[in-house]
Image (cartoon, rainbow, N blue to C red; front, side, top):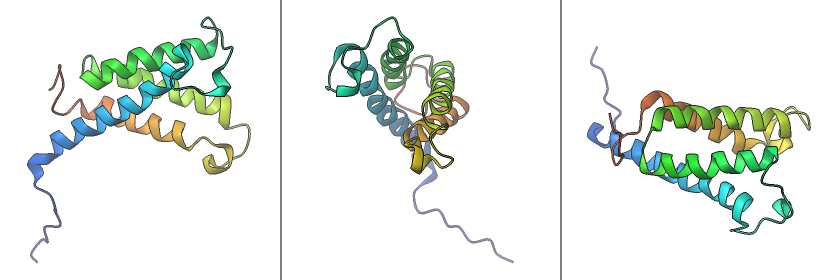
Length: 132
């Protein structure tokens, strides 16, 4: 029996699309760190947050990790650390509110966790300083 090829995009695009996923996820994630540490963009929930708190530490990870991930430097270890940060954030801030992420506002933490875990496994793709 003949195998059907269901590929709609050329296989050669995959490393570039992985790179785009890494960059877009990193830039979106970076905003969380800049909002916590610099108040930009302004998120009222972070007003008066101490830099020397758990949220301050998370902001530092998000800012530095977001930059490193965006340029693709130390991609695998940084993505693994950020994946762990999001797992911790989910269980500390969301899981206790309700079982399902849609009910406990944890969807973004779960999604970041698994996107970063995928990047840690798959590597940076193209358009990275340390591409495989």
